[in-house]
Length: 566
Image: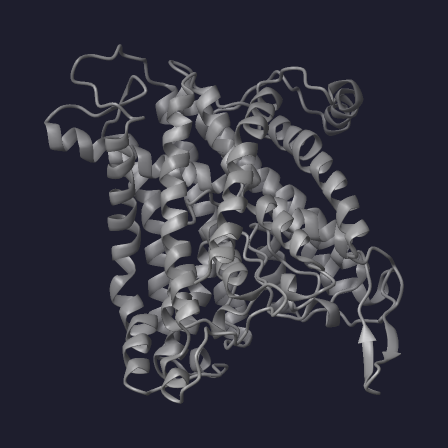
């Protein structure tokens, strides 16, 4: 661990902190329907979209109508991408003449990008045409992120409103998110990425001979435009298999920093948007603080574990950290930081190979996802996932003091707690059960590159990542029909089985009347509440997975100290 390594992390976090209020205030104005500095340019486009789509922007939806619209849009999005992947061979912008995807892999990929997971059981530069990359994956990177933010805004409206049945209009929220938030930032930063050296073209791949005389194929394509939305929308799916470890996708240390900031930008900003919408910014900063503490705890463990290096190498008299699987341009600290950030959110982009991390270093990304990715989280999904934990925390605090729990003037009763528990149970059930099945059946073991606890970690990581809609992987697990179908189904439930109870919770809260605070009201923006919230997250999230994690990275670490590797 070095001073420079810590400075990198601190500078990154200070940038995120400085941008949280401005971007949060801007998003509040966008979703509140107020005029912004982009309105003169984009408002006519917005109206045209509504006219073409037959949307009445002043017509609001109940929580179940909002959920139905979200599901309908997602089904159509899935079908569109599936057909595109199954027919790309006969479509234009395919200079490498890539074949159509197989049915099971197209199913897995279409669900992956529809659910903002971007799990990739293929090598992008060897499987997808430019049309599939641009009109398929990049388009989904925008709209799947927009869907997540729209759901979060609807959930916050449910918390903020009283005695109503509506949560807004899904089509309006989705349109405004893509048009006013995602697109402008992507255009500006995308142009910077092109200037920094990322390819942005439609050329066929070029063959070249290196100075040493080796023949190389240089990958081209529209990378920069996809790179920016992959990070901003916490999607994570790379244009090439090496993802952000590739010099094409991540040319310099500065682009690496910009990508990190993009990953946290909207998730952090939404906490301030939340405070503005509930008319108490202290509530948003309390959530931000809890997220920040969990982020630094994860980064410190990951950085320490990687900087310590392999004890078996140290026993041979060689000092130093673990550089295996790291991008040598950025080093251990930047790799540990990227791994922490990308799994705190639902991004899944990587600039190093998580499969090559030390056991405790690999445990950090795994636990980050097992928490439900609520540490800033996926765009939108991190906030509404955190609100679920806030409701559970308020309920537990009420039980501790022996009074009806309240949150922002609303009583938290049985119905709200049931919805919150239902959302919170999705992650452990859909991570642990498929892992147990895959670990004992031949198809689940057929494509493992490692045995013992590390092989188990690969399986556990795959189902945790797909259910958490993250998309990163321990690279030792290969695809087959079983994993394509089961992980695809897991991604679908990981997205919608959390979003729908969260919307139902919002609908229940929106219909409640507000009661004035009394002397016994539990303050939900204090340091005590932040500590209690973190405790609930750790107990409900992390400790649920402790037995499984003990069979994987924890026991692997203990065996490594005894000289055993896998």
